[in-house]
Image 1: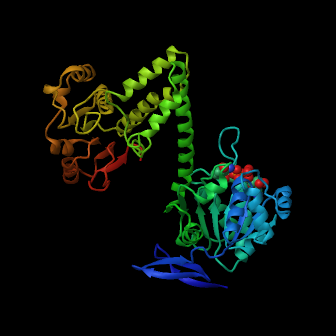
Image 2: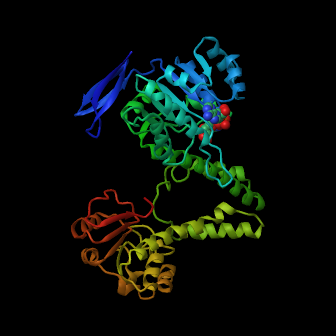
Image 3: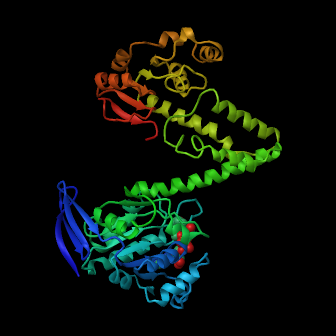
Length: 479
Ligand SMILES: NC(=O)c1ccc[n+]([C@@H]2O[C@H](COP(=O)([O-])OP(=O)(O)OC[C@H]3O[C@@H](n4cnc5c(N)ncnc54)[C@H](O)[C@@H]3O)[C@@H](O)[C@H]2O)c1
């Protein structure tokens, strides 16, 4: 039985909500928090019985849920009716036979029957690539309309979870409107809509289902998020709730990262082979480094890299490969990508139309005086070239004391640098129309907090922790 209840939404608006048997509502610090019994059997429908759907169907049924599988492919439905899995995958035939025999699984091509029989739906239809690379959303939008047409007939709150990979904005910008216009209902109020990226890999998908790296749920309302916590909270990993768009983007970021790792190892393999080095040994040792290599180090969006080692050594590696006629397209694209990152920061400042720029930080890394290949120096050069009025503050850089290659580099890049540098951080912050902040020292933060004005533009290339602790107009370099 389901009971309609009125509850105060997180935004304070009264919303029509439904409370299922088994869901309890507690009030915590003035906000409503829903709790569903962890692991309790649920009525679940799965739309699309390909790799993702067939594995989810078998594993959810194994975990005690009553599962309805939906597909337009009659051949797949027939296989499941006969206790056979519609995919080839380690362990899936045995598991499918077991769960279909004990009556936990129903299959149908009727969206209506599936929605009316269940409270929670996973959408796992394909989102294949079109000729131009964009994804084909025909199947998922069709399903959304069909589900929407049935929802008004339901007496209980329905939770729809998109598991197909879709671009950021698709769930809220396309799928929600499709369901809403077909149903006349509102997402987050009359039904729940979530996005839960699927991390399984073909070949090891049952193992991956049971041991995901994390469970990530993008949710716009508590109801769907908490129901999913009850269904998946037992898995041996962190359960993370985030926004729908973050969860959508995360899936692309993960797959792009995996593809990057494969290509990186292969490019290192090709150049190693060409120069007679064992690539397996190189990569084995690379993976031994859990501080800088296999770690979160260097994996936060920030400013461009620079300094005396990374650009120089990358150039040398690319030259080595060229001499051996080895193509390294990915490694070869890194320096242009790094330059593009600096360029878009420069363009932000130039596009503002403001003429007076204050740069906080000049060296390639805060706290050092190494100016070689510093992205901040590249920016300064461009600002000078464009005739902007530039002042620079960096307490670690004392031009008079610079020696050797470091001195030669800065003299060639910005000959009159000394005349642009100031020790007076406060007046630099006060006077500039645009501040480019590449340091987050306590004195920088204090000066920003005390001396910025609402008319100033603040371009953050350092990743300030507190983005609101100043009065300027804030822009992050890539956030
Ligand atoms: N295969 C993987 O390892 C994997 C992993 C993570 C995420 N994903 C993503 O999950 C989604 C599904 O991938 P897959 O490999 O399972 O796809 P798939 O092509 O194997 O299966 C899709 C299924 O959807 C069915 N379908 C199509 N239109 C339908 C409709 N209108 N109603 C009901 N069923 C319909 C198809 O008949 C097919 O059985 C994709 O977005 C994919 O990117 C896949």
